[in-house]
Image 1 (cartoon, rainbow, N blue to C red):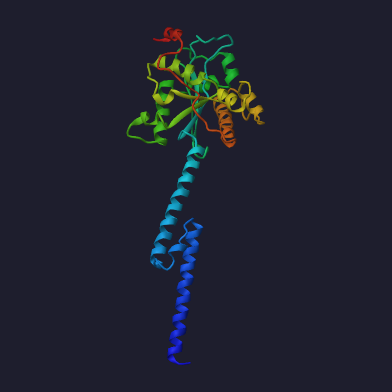
Image 2 (cartoon, one colour):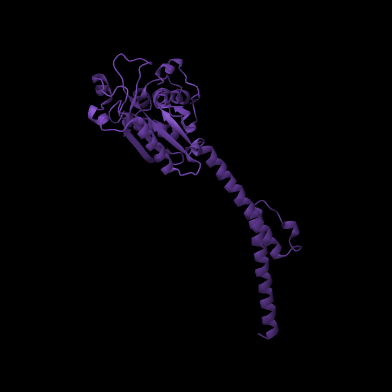
Length: 291
């Protein structure tokens, strides 16, 4: 075989390779919805490579946008859910106007994306107006006189709670930065609306704005599952669950509310606010409690 023949063979092979590469580019573009068959022979390989890169870039952007839209729809609207169940002083015949004081203040911080517990805050409080617990209160809550006697007053505990919140989510704007980021979850409206409001009145504390939004798990349970409003134990049973711990222990109650919250998310529900607490006291009779 002479040199001319070798040259012709090599040239033919190169042409075949080039044609194969062009066909491969054409196929890849077609898979992306771009038909360039009419331009073959009119555009260079580098031009097709450029078109392919641009098409892949557009596809990637579209896919990322779709994933983001799905994630945004799936993720919960709040950065953190604060599950809280307060225990307060009480007696067997105490009504709404009873001057109750917080004696257990537990909060479970749950990440709004993973629904995992981020941190917990639990403190007992020493009542000031009526420091001696009734026998009914001790039996009902399981809290002892020794526990409240050794505890700090609510004002100190609440200040520590705010520090705990800022340690989890530092901000130069203080707790005001939390207003749109967090929401409280409670079994009924009483914990934040009533028990805390009375303490704020006693101590002349201004309620932080981030403590004005509530998810009432009872109302949400009825809305999401179409069942009658019931208590904590009833909600658990309705979801095929059983209470874990001691009923009317604030921390155990909060832990079970958190279990219901997670179950709602597992069932595909978006957990939204159910109510707000007005900046005006919801009960005129509370004015009688002011110092």
